[in-house]
Length: 410
Image (tube, rainbow, N blue to C red; front, side):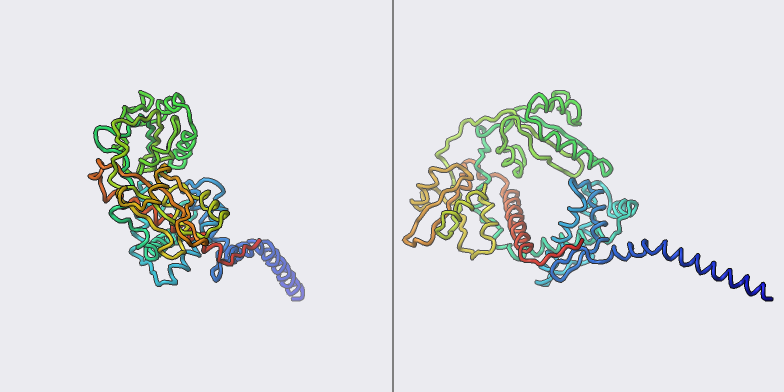
């Protein structure tokens, strides 16, 4: 009986040692799992966990987002917390139906249904909640920006004329373009986009033609992607400014549609039969600023178009920035004199009153050819509206970030 008692005691001791070893071995795993859900970043009153960062980074890798996916995950999660705080503060609520519709729209961009896209994410260790949070933040923020800046972003009828400086008649601006058309699927989108980004760096017309023959799936591929002369007005309104900004040999940024990426290279450009003196309207912007030369020069260095002024004036009174479109005869003379020296997108500092503490920045937005008044106004108006909302959005999120208390833990 004594031997049996000793045997049982020995076994119990061995079992205890075994359990202790198991506990020691599994402790790092348990601590690691717990650490994932500890705050990695604090944004004011909101926490971001290491697990959320891991999930967002994996999500970006699936989407083919370039750069350091872990750093991108941190940056966007911080922005999401700031955006959520902003839109919740004015009572914006995102419904489940809105999230579902947003997910469907997002998945359709890579030719998948929402269920198929979620299955793809889950196969790669990404929870559905990660996708939902990403979509919800975007929807809520868009509604917040729309409510806050709707009035200031909506273009007036005269302002819509800004995109009509290109003659839509027999004459006008003609462009000679080459194209590359790269179809993609959900599985190869990342690779196709990287390929497109490499092609955008080409400046040689012959190299672009070689790439078109090798990679393009358009009917023009055997001809090096070369298109015939066409009026610039035949291109979509949102692409025209991009094409006009190109130098000979330069390539547009990737133009992403639902199932393909398109690239355009400018080979030549011509203007013919244009009567420059005949304009239905001249559009300009006037920004009132303190009479400080350093401040004026700083603003001039930050702007390339009139749309950029909306970001500069985002938190200023409405009357600080004025954007007008008038016939030449209706423009005040002191402004007309300044505009006569400018090209589109150029600006000048002018003193126009007896107030020595205030000056105006005057910028020429566009000159509208009189023959272009039948162009699709709704399309142009929508593009203008979205551009201005984007400018307000960028400026406002930068302000929120600057004012926030952001703490990142090691």
